[in-house]
Length: 435
Image (cartoon, rainbow, N blue to C red; front, side, top):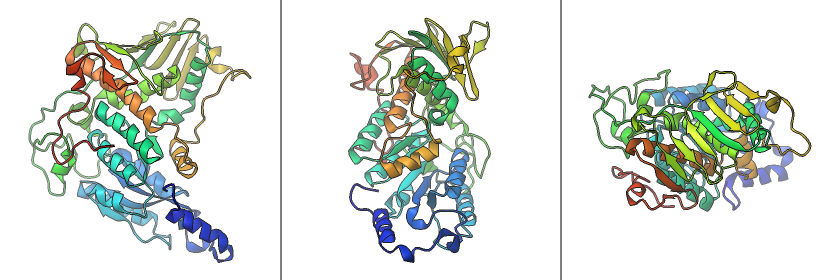
């Protein structure tokens, strides 16, 4: 998938020249899938609860074929291997799946075109960067990074390597969110005054007690760059579990609700404000920063984004994302869209109004862009900018003070102490890579 002639390009060219020799997919027992030469080959890094859904989609999609799975928990890894093996059992062309605890083995495979990263947040950056440097396209779950420095690095590497990158913020592919942002960006609520984003608060330092760990987990590897600490099942539940683990609550591995749901909803705020390549210039914490609610983000155009719920004209409190303008307001959440007055989101776009890009589906958009080499609906910079809004908000809460941010220069303005928070100390050998 590099700019030069690739394995897949060569196979396609050869197939065109020798067309009479091409065997139809039905004769190979492919169950409706495209023949191997036409599929995007994928390795899945991290096969926990969220990633199992991705894995099943990739296995059953005609555009893709899974060649590798990776996880540091042996039981989850074995389950993923069995799932893939069984899923391709009728495919006479399939040569088996690599199952490994080492993501570098996946990245080293020259027959893999792309990787999907579904690890915990603190393990997003390094494999994504290494995969892009190896010539692979990337789908990485949100929140995209653990730190601001990681966010900037991912953009730099993606641009340098010309990789196609989809951030797993699937609300960008949701119709209700596109409709809401189209209404706002076409001026239907007039000048935007405030945006309310209702998500959880920041993470806290990990204080979990030590528990006995069953064999089969590469615990040192699970921790990675994070400080060494004793095992606790809350961080990495053993086996094939059916819930989202609570490592999200702890600062060493995630930014809490601010980055978990914030990467979704602040992302929609950024989209509606047309700030995909920028961000706020200041964040002001509430009088009680420990409350974890009430941050006020100020943008250069005067718009204020408030971390909290909104009371609508009907007297009800609304979560999700709420755009408030001079001439009306729009509320949007998953499966919900409402406006005051109601015609704001009900009337179709007029001839002079500009539509936003319509996604064919978040995964399909990634597949299509891998083939076209266009940027995805939630390109790396979009994901990086949105999670950075969350990160600077967390720093305001954690440190209890106002912060001025330069979205162009990617640093805090006139604040040496705050600029030390752009990244964090990392346990070797998992240092921040170079672009």
